[in-house]
Length: 120
Image 1 (tube, rainbow, N blue to C red):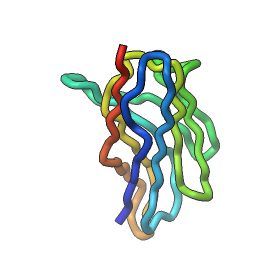
Image 2 (cartoon, rainbow, N blue to C red):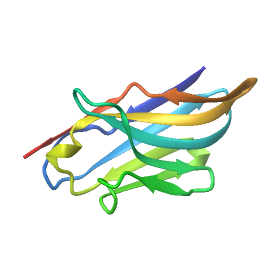
Image 3 (spheres, helix red, strand yellow):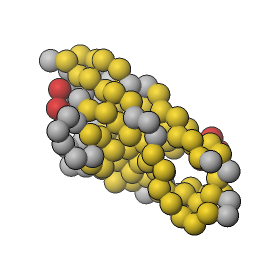
């Protein structure tokens, strides 16, 4: 089994910052990429930021220059530093891992989600 445990969500005023963390554990052979997705009420889940095993990153246009994704490969953990938050960032944030388990082909795994609420 693989578990993705997220932490760091909460309530913050506009202009504030939060840092999300996601730790992957289980019988993991290798992690190809990890990322963060957001889902606001009534909307589809969408990519916020991703990072691959070579530390290449990509971001949604709406968060460029405000959010930073980085990882600690030794801990199988990915972080999302979110600065200059605004109410439009309010959503449930989900961690995603694209990884190979021992004896299982490359697959996607999801965390349980963490709520981020930005008040105006």
